Image 1 (tube, rainbow, N blue to C red):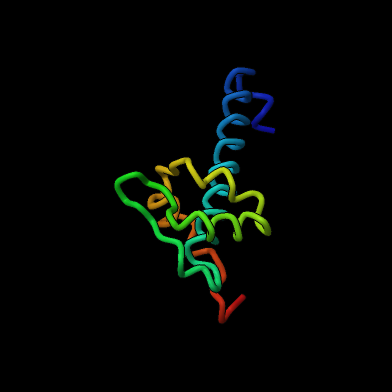
Image 2 (image 1 turned 90 degrees about the horizontal axis):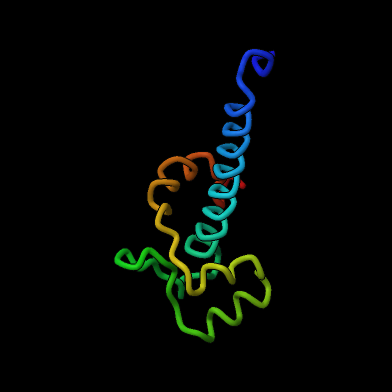
Length: 97
């Protein structure tokens, strides 16, 4: 019902914000799984460049079964630390998953 009282521009902004938050959460989950996933100890986090790092052979192997991770091979994800403080507490751990 709130939509009846909000100007159209505010509704559009709300949709855009919700969409951006959903994208950040999905991207964060991909990076989190790369860094914290089972048998992924070869991956590391470069604080300076704000990106996932590992050897090319490890990336190639991982991307062959996790196509969505390819976007983070050469691109930074500057909000990882902040989003981890928001979303990690809601993420199931191995023992509770």
